[in-house]
Length: 151
Image (tube, helix red, strand yellow):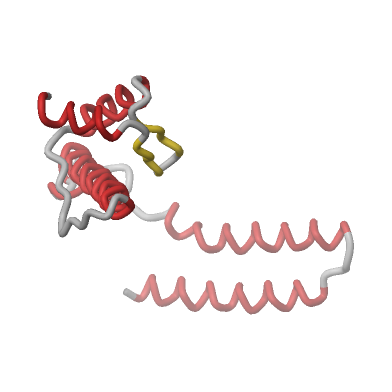
């Protein structure tokens, strides 16, 4: 704890010193170089104690807690991505339904992301809808109704 306190006090002293030196720095091109050198010096003072810490090289991935291991992080990212895509599809579908006078409390897609993208692409290729960024416009409503009934 004393080491951290000494580092913080030293860092404050360096910050005050750097501020005083920056006020004395000349203007123009030479002043920019001077400011860069002062910033680099402050950064070195900030990082230096971390470089001298013992035991950093001994850190093993197996010793990391389970919640930060790559497989858990990957699964969490996948779940977040799915929730974001579902929210975007829900919002877009709700807007389309509103534009046709329908109201929906909640629209929940029941398909994978790749299937939703493939289906929308097929509808666009068949000129049933147009896709412009996040906006979907229905061109042939009758064919879409027929597809929804027949499959």
